[in-house]
Amino acid sequence: MMISVSRRFKEKSVEWSFLSPALIYIILLFVFPLLFSLGITFTNMRLLAADVNFVGLANWKRLLADANSFIVMKNTIIIAVLGSFVQYLIGLLLAVLLNKELKGYKFFRVSFLLPMMMAPVAVSYVIGKMVFSETFGPFNDILFRLGLPLFFWGTSSIKSMLLIMIIDAWTNIPFFVLVLLASLEAIPDDIYEAAEVDGASEWQRFRDITLPLVLPASITTYIIRALNAFQIIDVIRVVTGGGPGNSTESATLFAYDLGIKGQDIAYAATVSFALLIIVLGFVFVVNLIRSRIVPQFE
Amino acid sequence: MHKVSLSKIISYIILISWAVVVYFPVYWVLTSSFKLPVAVMQGATYFPFIDFQPSLDNYLLLIKQAEQLNIVKHFLNSAIIASSSSIAAALLGSFAAYGLVRFSYRIGPINNENITSGFLVSRMVPPVTIVLAFLLMLKQLNLVDTKLGMILAYVTFNLPLAVWIMRDAFADVPYEIEEAARIDGASKWQSFWLVTLPLVAGSFSAVFLMCFIFNWNEYLFALVLTFGDAGTVPILLAQSSTSRGMNWGRMSSLAVWSIIPSIIAGIMLERFLRKGVLAGSIKG
Image (cartoon, rainbow over all chains, first blue to last red):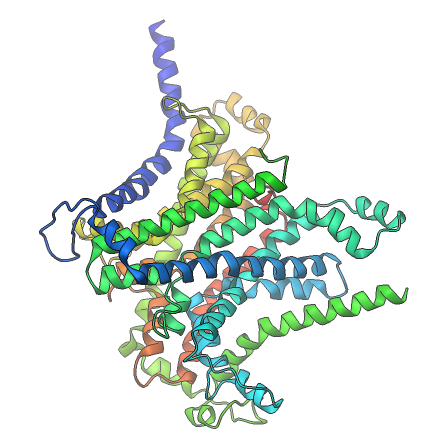
């Protein structure tokens, strides 16, 4: 009896030796900092000062009264929710075309992944500062040669935002292509053949077969990409610095400036938590929509 | 018949347009890296030897200034930080994923499913929400602006992905294969290292490469947690892009260098992706 209990214990501890390193790691270096960060939002902590006091909800009240925090959240939501959706549509179109396996599709397939590998900081510089440069950039040069109106974005809030979204799209559409193509390739060919025999047009086949079958993967991919876009900072910091004014400033850039440059780490943590709340709200809403339009998902 | 060929033409037009969109910036940074400041100031030029004279000056200047701009240090930091944290995350993630597939754990009401989704949910938290607390923690440990501090941070972000993908990989390995080893007297860890892990080497490599690309390109944590000694390549790029006396040409050659490692990793990764290594992980 004693022997079997200790053997059982030994076996369990071997099993736990597989999981525990990762679990302990995540608790110490993810869960703890997360709770720590939440705790900071109720203090007046500054980056370099040792003196810390409990201030209750003062930071949260300040957040709700701060017009800037609303602007940066709005910017972030536009980039993440709308930007990712447009990227999804373009990605789906490209994936459908690639899935036709036209001659040379392997070339397109490999090249389409290229932007995903490149550092956003490098991409932002090359596209934002060089290709779209107002003075020496090829984009305006080509527009000029074609006799079209030039694209001056530096002083326009809307055009600056558009440029940020273009760069983010350039980098991230490949992610949609990659995942959606994998999910399209998993659809058996005979379903299409049967529909073709029944006289369904290309558009009908897309609407009635392809779209419903890639919908679950679409929603998952959209959530993953949007979660990532909610974190945007590099593109903005390199290309517009958040300007003009704060019209392209993201929540992460705002929190960085507050916490590191302004040393107001307590308020920065509050802003970052507000972003987390918005992200959770977004995931909740998308899952709600998913349960409506994809019934097999409970 | 006529209709089919029309849709084919439209398909090609769209695919080629997108290829142009993808390749043009790459072409532009490559050609710009061979342009002298004079060639840049003359306005947009497109074709080497035709409308501008290519020169290696930018690359040579960059080598000359390597010391002053700490280029070697930043690249070395990135290489060390990105590869060590990727390998650490792939290993820790594999251990955990293997355990979650093969054994059943219970912590009070929490079971394997809950633990797995816990790992995944952690990816929902925006990095900025923990980076400030991370900075304060590293300060207590005297690890701010060190490679070890950066590695600790990156493993946190790589682990959930590693657990997610490796769990699917291990789930596809039939238990019978391990059982044979177990009967021959191998312990659980022995059969993990000698039998199961080699069978999922493809997924393991894919995880390593994905983490590597993420870590090589990461910006926010490097921005907050380093200020000189442990700075990575994206920090170097962002700093140089705003520093005085930095022109397009030199910046381009720097950018070209910076994307080479992640492109190589990406090309290797694409081979694994094509083999369907990740097919199971991305189902809706």
